[in-house]
Length: 561
Image 1 (cartoon, one colour):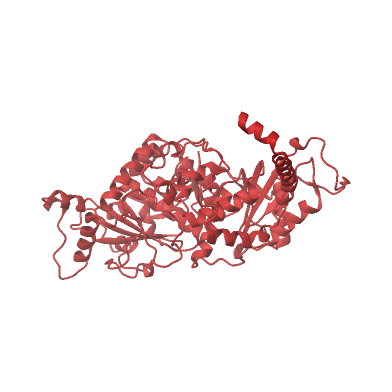
Image 2 (cartoon, rainbow, N blue to C red):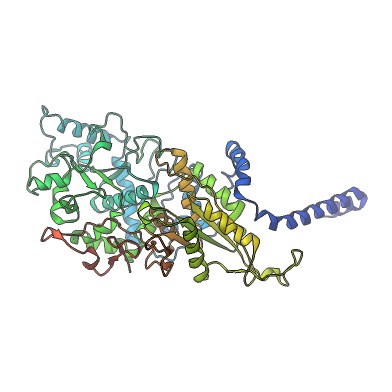
């Protein structure tokens, strides 16, 4: 310390440098408020350069102290290399702490599943034998596969105990995430290994591996040499579908031996016999079937609560039934470093400086048309009417050079607009640029992309979509469109009840313009509405006390508490 002080006194240039440095810091502080108003589009070149240089990967959470539980109360396994998937242990640093308790039984079941995946997943001897037996059983000239009672060695026993559910994609990213979470819940309930089918490039470099294991174990189905060919062509008419098997009267529990594989069709166009998946006879037909291929574009996890055989286990897994996707989504879906860099770079640049972040997600549907002007009016009516955003003061006469008397008392809000359409961002941004916010404070508006058209088949499009899902999940308040799976995923990960924009009535803004959702759970938009006893129609929203009709989908149901 003394040497340093003497050095400053003996060298006047040191003092000059300190003065210059102080002036630079003051200049930067003066510029910072202006930076929050820079258009996101102006930073596209900077972001592109940063991506090429790898900027933002290592220090993604440097601005936030790591004071929270990185394992989310035991939800996440500690058996991962942190840098291989930065989002896994860091996403919680960008969100409000979850208010939804985690059951110790769910934690135990997740660890048990991870052990099962290590034993039976791709790359293991057990998986190799299971595929070989499937191939043999599908060969009309081969003898039937050996039953579990005929095994003699421990390795054969392990192979016989491995059962699988193969999920195959359809529709957009939101639908895929919701149906994958549903398939995983079914895997937990039935001790099956979940494998995801990625036949193209559209899902590559999107999600990290969710299950710990060695380098060769994965949750992605190795498609090469897999005996069940043309998985993407399976449909409601497939002979091996559960619905068609039950319709032919071939689903008896006493059958011997069970078929080597069955296809479960839970897509929007499923038939009454397909809906028997949610009945005891449907589950009986699937028992003993080692390979299930499943396709769904819905959050069918809700339907599993209709099955009495799973009622007790589900109650132990989720004492609060309205937290199913919140917990499973945070466990399963971790963006790769590529996607995580997009989300965190944008967050640091535009959203982090604000005291409150408001997400506005707008999805347009052909069957619920409304003009862009009316939709914008609906957003403003909702946001201002519910005090989510401040109204503007049209009569403000404050000179541009004037400063507030108490700057520390003004609240900064950052609005993140997520939409294929850029018009809502433009209008909302202009409103707060041209007018003061009533009551003081400031509102900055940002939109990462406005791609115009959804391109689910493109990997880059899906990466950007997932980055925006993550950004929305960092919000403190969320406004979402009715019937949007994109919105369901975002507020589900955040653990927030969203304000839902009501569907238009005759192309006009409805009254009220939005409603606070009764639950954080997604809607099962195409519920079976099937009575297993009479094999006729039924109202699934009246069968059990914790499942109700969705607020935004009259024919859908969702879990409530």
